[in-house]
Length: 253
Ligand SMILES: [Zn+2]
Image 1 (tube, rainbow, N blue to C red):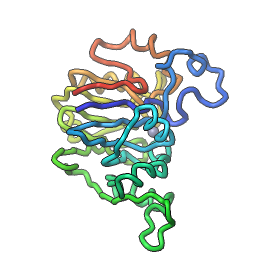
Image 2 (image 1 turned 90 degrees about the vertical axis):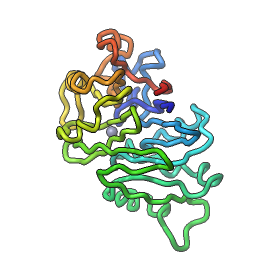
Image 3 (image 1 turned 45 degrees about the horizontal axis):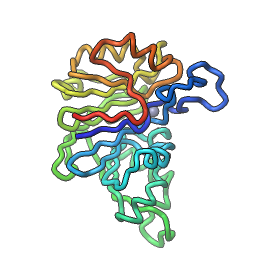
Image 4 (image 1 turned 60 degrees about the vertical axis):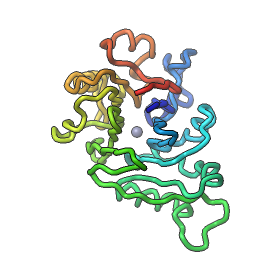
């Protein structure tokens, strides 16, 4: 399984438009972060987790040729706004399966009504196949995917475990029984927004405590704000099995 970090930034991305913050002005490519998304390549299939506003740029910069499924974590705009841009994949492949909680599908139907239209659909609009998921394991082809349920302040979010890899973003609080789904991981990805606490995201200290509790072989931090600091400086202070993810990083599990 190969995972590409397509975007590792918080909702506004880095740099923030018009910001003079030193991290936003950094020349280091690792300090430039598009909105969060990962591409999981497994047995020749391309599975996307979240489809945010930078989706088109992310597909182009990674030369992605096929899209076999989209899994959604939750409905916030930084995770969903790119759905219209699946058109080139739709034209070549037909309807694209989208896996999401019932509430997230409802939100997508409202915001992208023309995509979900069944009668008299506008020519050129992309099409999807709705795959409603609950908090229990499901399959994409032969791959078992285990949803992990947690809270992002008032919003419910799904993380996903696939074999020895788990991806959790927009986590603030999680029940013990959900944590039990995350034992014996080779790679854990979790959000770490900034140094200061935040109402709906783990900060760096909370993310490191969470990682220490689960003890995966390696952990990667994502959904990063400019307020976390410069990539290279933060990386130096992390435990030896914890890494700041950065855009276009590829890892093999
Ligand atoms: Zn987010």
